[in-house]
Every structure is written in structure tokens, then in C-alpha cells.
Image (tube, rainbow, N blue to C red; front, side, top):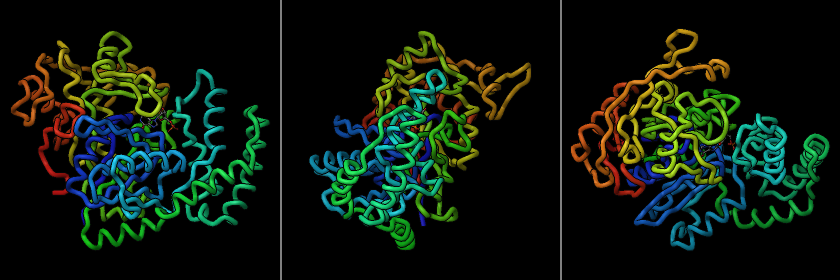
Amino acid sequence: MPAVVVVGAQWGDEGKGKVVDLFTQHADIVVRYQGGNNAGHTLVVDGHKTVLHLIPSGVLHPGKVCVIGNGVVVDPAVLLSEIDELRQRGFLREDSLLKISDRANVIMPYHRAIDVARERLRGEGRIGTTGRGIGPTYEDKMARIGIRFADFLDDTTFSDALQRTLKEKNAYLRSMLKEKALDFDAIHSEYRGYRARLAPYVTDTTTYLHNALRQSQRVLLEGAQGTMLDVDHGTYPFVTSSNTAAGGACTGTGIAPRDLSAVIGIVKAYTTRVGSGPFPTELTDAVGEKLRQDGDEFGATTGRPRRCGWFDAVVVRNAVRLNGMSGLALTKLDVLTGFETIRICTAYEFAGRRVQDFPASNSVLNGLTPVYEDWPGWHEPLQGARSLADLPANARAYVRRLEEVTETPMIMVSVGAGRNQTILLRNPFE
Ligand code: IMP
């Protein structure tokens, strides 16, 4: 029963979209298990760029089934515009190729309004959310006042739930957040339109996946964001509101832990993060700016410049253990061309002591000094490399060192955004 999970090992934006697109050739079904349209997965196929926010990154492979699992929070308007765009381009020709869990929660206009207003009020202390209503939707899920697709499809249940919840949300929006109240009729009629169009895709995806695994179909589980944004294991409170780590793949789909066959971590050859929060290897100088420009490090969802820094092996080792990663896919190695020296953070120092594991305390995190080792860079462009032997010796040595410091083998090295700009070392399903 092969089910492979793909998880970001850093703060998201590691290039999961490209890796999932590539691995999809070996899979039958691709599933998103958490997050929502805070994610932006960029795929470049035959020179054409596609940015996906909700639909799994396997959608560009004709005939593969894409599933939005119960752990995802879905903004219906965003999903519909993604479906429309993909349909126009000849993908998702049949409704049966996309399945939305009847247990997934729906993002409502008050979730977005609360997300944006709270961030505004937080000022300097803001989390730097994407403003898509992700956190408030997960809050309602846990508070047991969320609206799931199964209930959204039934007008009486939906109307009752909306009426009840909106009363509470409007009071909060008005008195605490100094925002305007939202109108029941406007939301109700807007969402009725979405319901009619999304209903054909809504199904019990948990049972569908159980049956598929029983029939030995190969399932690829696509994480969004990264391990360091996990609500339990990340840099809390500067995290997203879901379990991004591999455990979330089980709760977010209903697939049992024993049915997961492998977890593959995606790591960028350096580190980036969007939004606020600790980032021990951040570079705020010209080197960081070169990484940002050469790596085109601007958010796929919000366009915000990403914060950039050297590879942090403490972060990745932590992710390897938390997720049980058996292999890593290294992305954006080509961006490091042209640096005289490339640094790898192998540990931190705090108050004169060596720190090998990622600390929980924000005050410790803010006072850490990274311990670096320096590696010689290279000047040759890498985009044409299709095997490790094609890489300059210094790039090969860097990759080998990353395997050592993360204690995990590379199964793939990406040297450009294109599907073919890849050195594939192992099929993740084997
Ligand atoms: P939220 O998920 O919109 O609530 O944002 C919480 C934090 O997660 C913010 O720092 C965001 O910038 C970050 N975040 C959310 N989604 C992504 C993503 O797909 N890539 C990178 N960072 C993300």
C-alpha cells in the first residue's frame, strides 16, 4: 500500500510544487492534506508557469486523480477560479479527476475579515499571515463551529450554521476589531452559487483513499508550508494554524500511519522564510539580497519579498526526525552559482553553550549565534546538469556535505524551475 508524503523541511517555499509534479509520474492519486490558499505551489512545464494554491500539484498530469483532503481549509471562490483556469488549459477534463473531502472546512468571508483586521491591530507584533483567513477557519474547526462541505451542501444546515456563527462573528468584528458587520443574505447567496458548482466534486475522500490503497494504487501526499511553520513543532506563534509535518498527512486524509511507506523532505539549498518570526541564519546584507534576487525569492501567494539566509542544518535535522524523512529532494542548487563562499550552519551558540536541537523559546531563538562551516563556491551555471557527475566538483562536495549534516541521502537535486532541470537519483515509491 504505497503512500508517500512530501513535506517541506524549512519554512515553506522549498519548491514542493515542482517535486510533487515530478513524483506524480509514479503516482495514481495526489492529495493535499492541510493548509489552504495560503500556499502557492509554482510549476513550470514546457516554459509555462502555473501557480496552484489549493489543487494538488499533480494536476498537470492527465488522468491522475487530485484530492483535497479533510485537513485542508477551502476558499470556494479561489478553488473555482483555479478549476476554471485549469479547465481552460485542457486539464481536469472530467469531474471525477478532482475530489474534495466532505469533511474539509470552508473558509467564510468573516474568516478573511478577522485575519486581516487582527494583523492590522497587532502592528509590529504581527505574524505576517497571508490574510487568507486560514487561522480563523482552523480556530472555528477546533471550536466546533466550522462549516464542513457535508453541511455546506445542505441548505438548511448551512443557513442555520451561518446564522448562528455570523451573529457571534459580527459582534467580534464590530466591538473588538472595529470592522463593519457582514451581511447574512449577501454571504448566503454568494455561497449558494459556489455550492452548486462545487457539489459534483464533494465526496467521502477518506473512504475513497482507503479503497484506492487496498487496490494498491500509489498515493502521493502533498504537504503545504513547511515543518518550521507547523503549529506544534514550528516557531510558535509565528507559524501557520495546521500540522504541516508528516503526522498531519494522516489526520488530514484519514490514511492510517501504518499505511505511509515513505516521507520525503524538500529542502532549498539555502533558507528562506516569509512573514515574521525567528530565523537564525537570516542575512540582512548584500549576500541575502543576492540570494533573493538570484533565487527570485518573492512569495507566490502575496508577492512579499522572502527573507533569505544560509542553509540551517539544525532546522533540517529537526525536520528529518519529526517527519521520519528517509530522503531529501534538494532544490534551487543553481541559485548558489556565483558565491565565493557558501556557509552551512551546523549548530547554534547560546550563552556560551553549543545548541544542537531547535529551541522552543523565542527569547533563546532571538539570542542565538549560528555556528558556520564554510565551503568554496563555484561559478559554472548548473541548469544543464542531469546527473551528479555534470555538477562542478565544489557543488558536488556541497551536496555531499548537506547529506552528512542532515544525516539523510538526497533522492533528487533540482537545478532550475523546469520539470526537466532535475537530477533524479531515486524513485520515491521504490
Ligand atoms: P497563515 O498561514 O496565512 O496564517 O500565515 C502564517 C505564517 O505562515 C506567515 O508567516 C506566513 O507568511 C506563513 N505561510 C503561510 N503559508 C505559507 C507558504 O505557503 N509558504 C511560506 N510561508 C507561508
